[in-house]
Length: 235
Image (tube, rainbow, N blue to C red; front, side):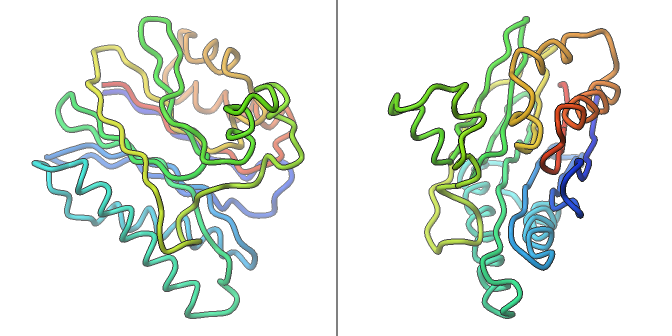
């Protein structure tokens, strides 16, 4: 297995509210990105809560999809309770996109607009669906995908952890094949770099760490308007 990981504040934000995870133990491998939101550093706290829970969670490998759902629900409640404990944390929340690899089986849990992509045999595909207003508009054919990139309401999420008691969690199960490359990223990457540009970098003959670093550099060169996290792995 090869890994690559890079995270950056970007060119506009004062702090990096993204959090991330690469963890390998004897039972499974887990990867995640979380994009926090909220004032007074609350977004940074919300995303770090999500990652800290994932690090220590006792997953049931026999029922991983159910266990992953329960873990994300627990994270949601924990962030909600933290927000209610202090007025300065009011309104905080986070996206969470995570992938757990058990042997060759991949389990994906997703809430928000961070993304997971798969590069397989030269085909680059987004596996997750953005829980955002602009994605809903694209699906309804009210705007195009190109218009969505610079839409004035592109920041509006329909779902995030810590904002509502009830959340709908997307769970995806798939079998990984040899040479599959998985990219997890926060929207600081895909909001400024088109999929074909990201794909071209991933196809280059470099290490995954070099690719992660290069994608961060390119996102910053394109404006760096948000925090950027790139989390890469192959089986």
